[in-house]
Image 1 (cartoon, one colour):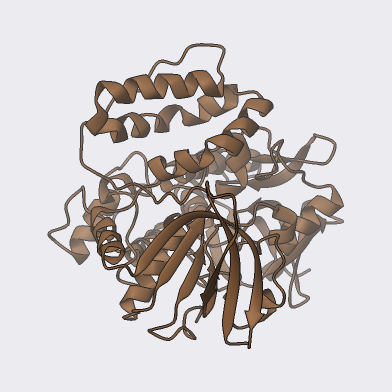
Image 2: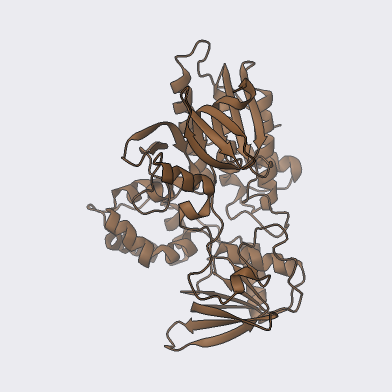
Length: 470
């Protein structure tokens, strides 16, 4: 295989996780090192999360907490002030700005990389992975071409939503159904007065409502989930110290401690929740698998609405739409669907607490439930990885099992030498593994591990490079 198709490190996935890892490798390597970043869309940096063109889609975290570098917390703020000089640390800016920021950070890292360090962005979709004859791994792409690398890092991000496990009677195959609101042109077929049903009431639903509002949508928007809870809103308040949790750790005792802490300052409960961020991974790690499952079954929804909150301006838009009767959230289970004359969809719902079914007629159904929890079903590369035994699911099936530092475990529980992951695929082991503060820490640690592994090669030694703004 030609050297143009062989790499020291191949990062699969060019969203935030893959980009931040590539940046750290470029910053800290003095060479020689060949790094490639494979992204199926070809758009390196923004990924799905930060590529939205919508001006109404804002970051769910203030600017001051979104730096790409933990040791330079104002890096993103300084970048934003070049774009918008009046940006304050507490502002919630357009999400597409963060995608542009990641692109800028990568450009700067490439420009300041050591002479013997090379980087190549690649466009293509990886569909399988196997061991290469000469060591390392071979990655096959959808177009039939192959890449080889000594070490491969999976940074594929979140999967598309899964279809609901209910009788759909043709809905899922019809143009009346939108499996993912993030797909290109997903909302183009929705007329301004069409009644719409959104499945899910979390942040994806909120973004979809904002997108419809940008299109001057006036039809009724129904949103259903099992609990019918919407994300809470961010409010400025004092930071709280992390609570002290008793041992041994159980979900019930953790919840009791949180309630007591929040009761001391009921108006500032957000500070209590935010104070958990530095200790969430250790708390999660202390829980037995049965306790983690109990959390997922009974408390996950309540955690999500308190932990993953809306920007104040977004909350105001949602409030206005609810007051006007345009947006109607409801606590209900979806029991099934039926197509009516190919123009309407009848949804069968079981409203919470009523003990009976109701029907609802809409023009369109949009799946806003979030990523598919089945890894093998959600991405062909992950399915091939699991089938081959080179990787295995974590104990909860939320992600891939690792050695605790990002190296994959194979089907027998052994470390798969040269295979790594970061970001959402570590959710089952860390729980908090999808936001920038956690991903940037993983990227820093994993880049150090990768560079140490290459340190015995002539001419390669880690060094620190100071990155200015591009």
